[in-house]
Length: 194
Picture (cartoon, rainbow, N blue to C red):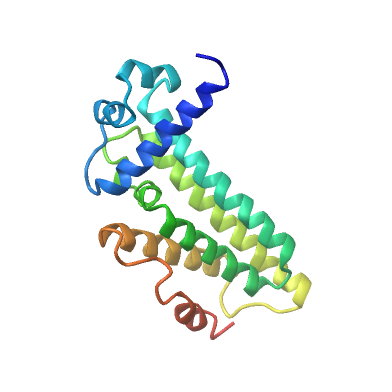
């Protein structure tokens, strides 16, 4: 097998894992089931990933890269804090909606019984997201000369909690209650006291 084919197999394994997370809500994914779905032996899986935890970490890395690269674009394209926060939240909810299997990772549902460092890694993702919101909200005072009725920390936490709740609800509903449902109306309510 040439080195140019290995990333494709790795990608195929991660895509299969994400699809299995989506199509088997509430079920634990075993390496045997994943290998059968990919069409390779378990040993072949382990040639690409040293452990199942590394496969999940590959998906978490994909989530981080996807979300934070889009956040960087939002920060470049928009200067007003409230608009930035709206777009960041909307990007996260749309990403979740389009990647149901990833929602099981973000909600922790797929990580039950897996390596504890995976849960810590997801927690780290949400902490980084909260820090990003806090930064945007703090910059509002500098750029726009305005504050909020509550602290930037409290508001950043509220925005992340809102997103986590929408993602968890999506998983609990068997992916029928979309995270973006009623978002604009809810956003207007959240920002009514800005």
